[in-house]
Image 1 (cartoon, rainbow, N blue to C red):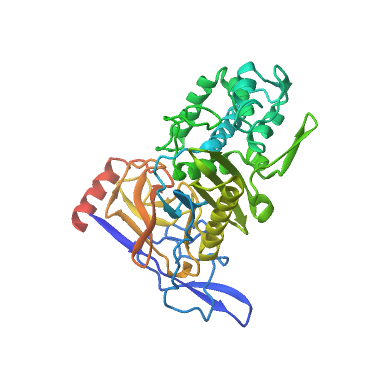
Image 2: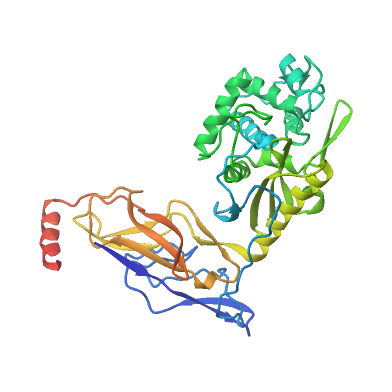
Amino acid sequence: MRLRRSLTVVMTTLLAAGTIAASSIAAAPQPTPQPHPAPQPTAPHPAAPQPHPAMPTPAANAPAENVPIPPAPDNAGKAWVLMDYETGQVLAGSNIDMHVEPASITKVMTSYVVAAELAHGKIDPNQPVAISQRAWKEGGAGTDGSFSAFDLNSKVPLMDVQRGLIIQSGNDAAIALAEHVAGSEESFVSLMNSYAAKLGMTNTHYMNPHGLSDPQHYSSVHDIAILSRALIRDYPQEYAIYKEREYTYNNIRQYNRNELLERDPTVDGIKTGHTSAAGFCLAASAKRGDQRLISVVVGIDAKNDKDGFRLREDSNLALLNWGFRFYETHPLYQANVQLAHLKVWKGGANFLGLGLTQPLEVVIPRGRYADLKPFMDVPKQLVAPIAKGQQIGTLRVTLDGKLVLQRPLVALADVPAAGFFGRMWDDMAMWWAS
């Protein structure tokens, strides 16, 4: 049997003092969650929860009724998605898991693999990259795709090849990096698919590092957003290259193909793509204040390049503007901070603190933060031994009665079994209580 315990937090705005204060309703029965980032209790029975003063409060004149949110803007893509970066929550989308040709957005994974192998010490950052016959012939100037104009058999600094991949979207750079990292393009593609599986990209399969069409080369806009989020989170130095507007190598100046960098200063990535089969594609990300969003639009059909470029930029920018206007991200709870304490039977300690293993943030319609309601599902009786990190219950957060998110509540400490007499005493007490 499990008990559901709830906490209601009421936020009060002190207009006269120009400050925000928070107070809680009369203490709920244990266990009681503590809003982020509450101080760690020191007593076995912590006092009533103390909301953090920085937690937002609705304006004094905010209407009580829900403010409607319009649907996301229409766009010309055959598949698209808008994702909140902090939580990974999808805010809107169409055909988000459909298999699509990613075109040169493939190079985001190529970039991710290079960054990962560098971080793991498998690549010497000072070792130059050889431009092979294959890289020059299949990805160079004689092909239909974009290229970085590296000379055949030349040795190019690794950072310049990375910039050729990311900024210029060079297919020659993609092949050269694949050979440099894994010995061959085919071995590198195996690495790409391994990383895709590790990231949970369940609708993705790569056949090459550059994105030229192949029947078995596909992804989804949801997977592209997952990958983009991972790149920003895991390798921020690599991601910083994506916002560079241009670079020069061998006296040739090359420009970033993502024109959103010019149109909106909050945009700092990510990657364009285009083939005749894939259509015009763009994955973008912008950060405004503390909030970051990721948008992906693919499969735009246009009469010419000028229209295709404009449509993919307009579509992504409209999604980003809509998301920032109608949604907001908030921290709820810190990791490893006691949110509840439970009575423990037959243990070397009488009580156990419960918390989260990771910080918890939530993305919700703007202005609805005060309407969130947290609940905990926990056992009626908890019996030692218990290991630190063991899941004991579940934290759920709802809005208007609908589940927004849930996370496991884990033990914050080990509780060994009590001695013989302690267990026997608790056996009798548990029998009496039942």
